[in-house]
Every structure is written in C-alpha cells, then in structure tokens.
Length: 218
Ligand SMILES: Cc1cc2nc3c(=O)[nH]c(=O)nc-3n(C[C@H](O)[C@H](O)[C@H](O)COP(=O)(O)O)c2cc1C
Image (cartoon, rainbow, N blue to C red; front, side):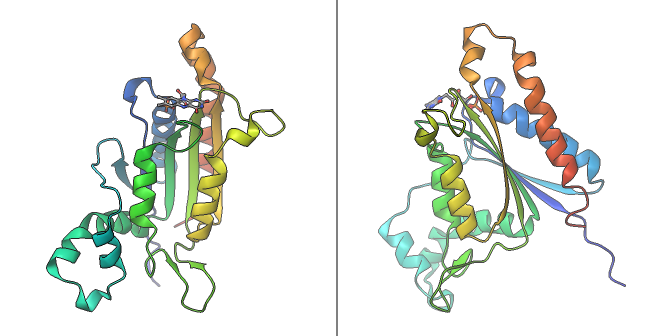
C-alpha cells in the first residue's frame, strides 16, 4: 500500500508592516499550530512584500496564449516567475494568506500575484465552453486585517472588496473550500488599545482553524 503523503502548506503574507502587522502575526500563529498538528508537514513561504512582481504586459499575455511547444526562449523567461509561483500553489494542499485591507481592497502586491497565477490552462480552463477551476482539492484560509469594521449588516459592509473578491477569484480557480477569518477594527491599536488583548480572540480563531485542518491532506 502507498504510504500517505505528508501535507504541504503554502503560507503567503502581503502586509508591508512586518512587526506591526496584524495579519502577519496571525498567519505566523496559524503556521506554528499547523506545524504542531501536521508533524513532518512541509511549509512553503512566499512574502509578497519581498517579491518583485511586474504588472502584466502585452508580451506576457502573448506568451501565455502561445502554446507551450512554440514559446520562444524570451517568452519562457517572461513566464518564469509565474511558473515558479504556480508550482508553489500546485505543490501545496493547503493555503494560508495574510491579507491587510488597503483602500477597501487587497494590497497591490497580492493583486499582482493573482495576475501571475490566474493562467488559462494552468489554474482555469474554458476547454468545454464553460469556466472550470483547476486548483481542485485545496483548502484555503484567508486571515484578513482591517482598520475599520465591515461586518455584514454594518453600513460599511458594502465597502469590503477584500473577502468577496478573494472568494470569487479563488472559487473561479477551483478553491471551493475557503475560510475567512477577519480581525476587524485594528485602528484601535494606534489609539492606545492593548495589542495582546485585541489579538487574543483572533489568535485563538486562527489556531483552531489550523488544528481543524488536521489530517485533511494526509
Ligand atoms: C495603505 C493602507 C490603506 C489602508 N486602507 C484601509 C481601508 O480602506 N479600510 C480600512 O478599514 N483600513 C485600511 N487600512 C488599515 C489596515 O487595513 C489595517 O492597518 C490592517 O491592520 C492592515 O493589516 P496589517 O496590520 O496586517 O498590515 C489601510 C492601511 C494602509 C497601510
């Protein structure tokens, strides 16, 4: 009988704030708990704030729509970053993303990353005329930090383009199992609120989520 394969987690951060970042602190706690509950599991880390991702250009689009067997060396080179980012996504069974809200949406670095990994024939296809996501069987956890509060039923809810956008894009790419954990109202931290007290329930939520994934990919 084939031995069970050890799970792989892809950990992606996108906050520029490092030590002050709420989303980074929460994804770090998630990963620690995930490692404890998945002995031998592998973690791939990608820091989008330390990765130079160029915007999409006409040449890049030309390269992705050229069949692989006729791509020029220049086109292959143009797609090499995208290929590496895709390999990380494909190798992992589970994903955890740290996402700060920037101007009601995702940070620019995360959007640039999405533009690199949303690739026809790799992460989605229209082969039979209807869109089909190719990232199947993956589990994603999105840890979002927002300065204000955007809970459903609040008057600011319609300004939240982070969760609906991520749900739509990843759903389109085939990731149907997505959990969203939001630390809302982080602006109190710059108004003298105790950081540990603020973070405590969110740390508990991410740790519970990491634990609940135990064994899913084994
Ligand atoms: C450039 C920038 C834009 C921001 N835009 C918003 C916003 O539109 N709405 C909001 O509620 N908070 C906004 N914030 C506050 C962040 O969402 C908040 O600080 C959050 O904690 C960021 O996550 P992080 O701590 O992981 O960086 C913004 C912060 C920055 C730096």
